[in-house]
Length: 238
Image 1 (cartoon, helix red, strand yellow):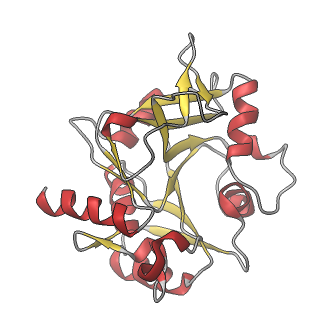
Image 2 (cartoon, rainbow, N blue to C red):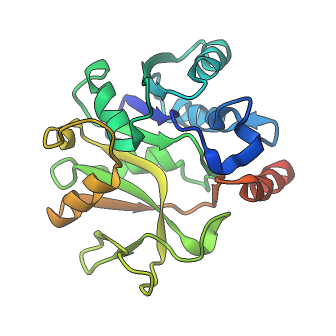
Image 3 (cartoon, rainbow, N blue to C red):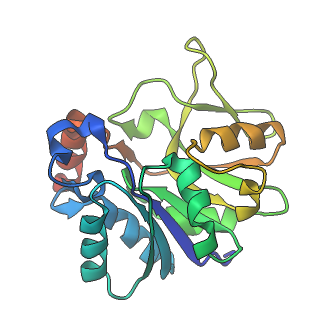
């Protein structure tokens, strides 16, 4: 397995669509089947052998920090505090001085998935090739995704490289599942500030440096109270 020894969990957002569920706590601490969303992420990293993890914080960030330090003393957490949320791209770029200059996992704090007989992060590390890719996206087939829109985000071209859907009419069979491996060199062309990773996705797609890994398990988008109920039911039963 390619040695990837760093993780990054995106945890700065408020999660406004969660409505009342985030009035008194940040979205990463919303519970599904008795466990905080961010705990699922951390435990996936632990299973992949990751001990070093950066977590960016903004809305009620001290609650996340306190929870992680108390729950996972075996992890080396570094916290990147944002006065105002910098979105996904800006949040990672802002934290790069705290990290080693080598590829790392990025996980959205609301990404919730089940593994099959393969462990997703280990499998992605196996598939990672920094000579071919600057970023490797976890793509989820829409038929095994729950709590999200029926149309996906990406198609695969003849070279099995991801191509983002850019109009409402196109049917895309895969969605981006909020998990990726990226090389820090992709940020050298960015000015910083507040911006979405989608900007980098599109640039790397044009440069043929964007890779994809198809997840074989199930995936749950915990984006609003209804989607949270769907995930709660599944994880409580399993």
